[in-house]
Structure formats: structure tokens, C-alpha cells
Length: 275
Image 1 (spheres, helix red, strand yellow):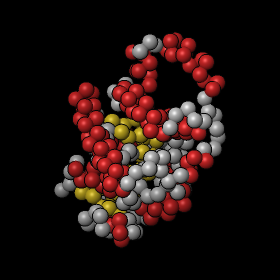
Image 2 (cartoon, helix red, strand yellow):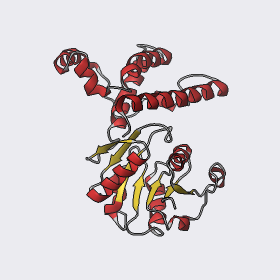
Image 3 (cartoon, helix red, strand yellow):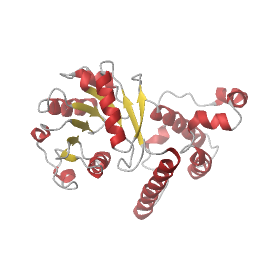
């Protein structure tokens, strides 16, 4: 009999998480209170009691503290005291969520990326009370799912990838707002430069093989004082999209990303092996 796991919250990312578990041979209990979202996942239920037999549960509801608290409380009310509960969040502090848990030591952050069923990406975030055993279980689970887990040992807002990403988005918006270039040009520049090396090297490896830290320090020195240091999002973020495009074109970009993610993941597997 296959191991039973739970996924709570069946938005786009939650559906991908459920698919990832299924693809790797797990018996999945998928829970969501929305009838519309349940209709997109065969066998999904609104009954949290169905999670009772799960050894591992991933909560993936909307990024709102109150909503997550409610879902986590419902999960805790039905699973065993030894079941590991992971919250899929990109920014909410794990320690804050942990404070309200009945068994906080078995609680851990698990940040997935879209498409969840394809990418190797996963951040595991330790809250102040996460036990070493819980972290070890989460790391093992991540590798069973084909992920290459990165452990975030300090519970800091945005963790690793989003902190770096938000800094980049802020500067991209600054370039757009100040008329340095339009959105299409900025996108092409980043795609043709960062997109070339980031899937293989990461920032530190890239600096090592292209001149070393000292060389980059010389280049950074005159630029750093000119970078944007805004503490609130640009008003430009109020727009719905940066690129005007039809529904068909937007769908084409989504499909292009899905195909690209598959190819990059296959390439990373070839270069670096299985996690």
C-alpha cells in the first residue's frame, strides 16, 4: 500500500503539488473548500477528516496569515501528533505560523515553485521551533519528489530566492519608471543574460568563473549608490500587466514557460544528477 499524504489548497500551485506527489507514487488526499477547484482534481474532497491517515501534509492555501492559520488548525485537528505539516509559503514567517500550532516542532516551511510537478526547486524553512527530525523528514520527502532542497536556517521574510528576486524586480521597475528602457527591452536583456547562466551557476559560482569577487567589487562600487532603495512598491505595480497581449498570446507564454521548465529540469538532471 502506498504512503498517504495530504495537500490542502488546490490553486494552481496546489494542483501541481498534488500532481507531483501522485507522479512519485504517493496516495494523495486533496482538500479544498471550493467546489470549482475540487472539480479540477480527481477525488478531491472538502472533508479535512480524510487527512487522518496522512504521514505528511502540505498546506498550500492563499498567502494570508488568517487563512493559513484556519487551514492549519483544521489539519491539526484530524492528523496524528507525529504527522509532519509543511506550509507552502513564499514570504509569511514560519515562526509566526508555528506559534499557534499544537505541536510546533513538527511544523516546517516548504516553498515550492511553479510548475510544482516539474522543477527541482524547493526551499525548506526552519521556524524557531522546528525539530531536527522534522527537517530531516522534509528533506527526505523533497528528494523523494525529485527536488533539490535548499535549507533556509534563518526564518527571514522572503527566504532566499524571493529576497533576491524582489531586489531585481525593484530595480527593473526603477529602470522602467525612470525611462531607461521599456518593459520589453528590460525583459529581453535579462532573458538573454541572466537567463543564460542562472539555471546552471547561481550568483556566487557565476562571479567565480567570470572574474572573481574582487573584479565584481570594482564594478559594483560605482553602481551600488545609484540603485533603487525604495521601501514600498512602485505605483507602476498597480497595472494589471506590463505587456499588452491577447488571451491567446498570454497562454502561449505560459505554455512556453512550461516547456522551458521541463527542458531546464532535464538539463539540470543531466548535469547534476538526481537530488
